Length: 116
View 1 (tube, rainbow, N blue to C red):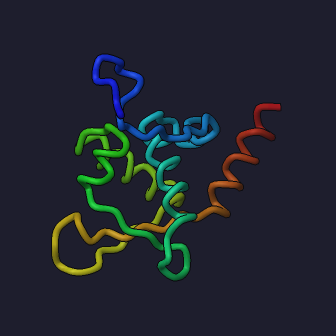
View 2 (cartoon, rainbow, N blue to C red):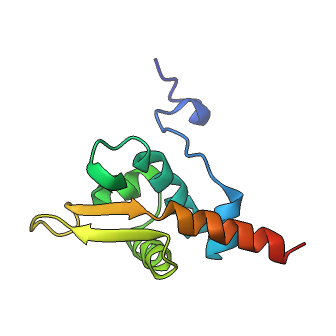
């Protein structure tokens, strides 16, 4: 049972945050979204690494506002770290995503080697 008087005992689920993602995206918000996308991409049953999320699911899970989420998504797509495609006709609810893990790894390695 949750003790509502203790804010740390809420039903919220934590997100593993990767600091390296902030370094390669230049944005804590994009890093937060990328961290959560990595979590879901490993749990999807869709083919070829695709997974789907609605905008309300993203905002509920990350705490990002819709505007923050849109900006983070655009940044990840522009950097080649995430692909998006719309499936179906409902706006936002049928967005599918796939991470480009090779591009993410390469960017992290490049960032590390350039800072040495």
